[in-house]
Amino acid sequence: MGEEGVVVRVALVGAGNFAENTYVPLLTSPELRRSVSISAVWSRSQAKVDKLCEGLTGGGAVKKYHAEDGLEAVLRSNDVDAVIVLLPPKAGLEVTAKALRLGKHVLQEKPVGTSRRDVQSILEEYGKMGEFRPLWGVAENYRYEEAYAEARNLIEGDLGPLISLTLNASLALNESSCYWHTPWRHSTEELPAVDGVGIGYLFEGPVHFMAAIRKLVGCTRGGAIHASATLMAKNQALSPQQLDTLVGFLRFEGDESTPCVPCSISITYAASRPLVLFVAICERGNFTIERVPGKYRISVVRAGQTTTTETREVPFNGVEREVLSFVRGVQKFKAVAGEAPANLRRKVGLVPEECLDLSPVEALLDMDCLLSLF
Image (cartoon, rainbow, N blue to C red):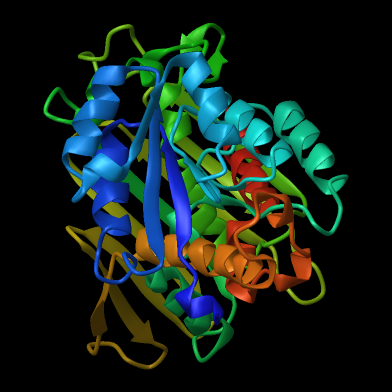
């Protein structure tokens, strides 16, 4: 059987908003339903598992698990090839490590963790699993968004190197948002804090922007970063009070092939209306990337053009592309190994090139970049 005909049996570990609103519709879409079978769902809450499974066509075939015993059972199940971990980052990293030890492929939702030490420890353990280790991907969809890839091509092409980059991410957070009602985003135990004050929203969401910035700058494997920032609490409705606004500066040190690039950053969760806008100044022109509902709008002005702006719209499709990359990677493993659980660990060399953007090392560097501002 060719790898295109291989069905990947997936367990959803976590049954919250993102599982219900994003992953279930995606995994059951025409593009993926021939390649993916949701074989199990786990949550701490049985009620959440039942609710999620109600939305699955033919949900009776999906095995339901809850509580700690259920988690152990789903990770050991011979009916599961891959686990999609949809949990808060601290718990998510712990479950990811367990699943990898048991030979399961893992797609872990970002952020990869809450501290460099914890993530680095699991990375070192993962490396020691050898060339037959399972695939570990971290779902950072901004690395897969076509808009940022196209913008990087502009920089490497006729617009030339970046001189500076500016991000204004003004986000409206209030009780109408489903994410407002997730207690872990308000927790100083589940997420980092600064001087005892929570930074949950500034940590969990803006790691996306760090991935986009690193993509645009061309900073793919580390390098020196200089950072400074001011943190403020502006959204008076947040309870307990959080630091929800960040204004700062990042400077990525260059090398012989990549120039030094300064980035100014403004992120707030206290805006009345949302605006996410990148402004890039290049040697031979400028461009902007604006996030609008369901898509991006890229506007380009080239040197010598004082009145002509080229504008095009690009779909917001990074989640679909990253999940498809992960599924294709697992299919390559399974096409060689067959169904036997003992053969799940295949050579790393079989992982397709596009899966490199799922690398947990890249996710760690995104997190490092963000933490440097706190």
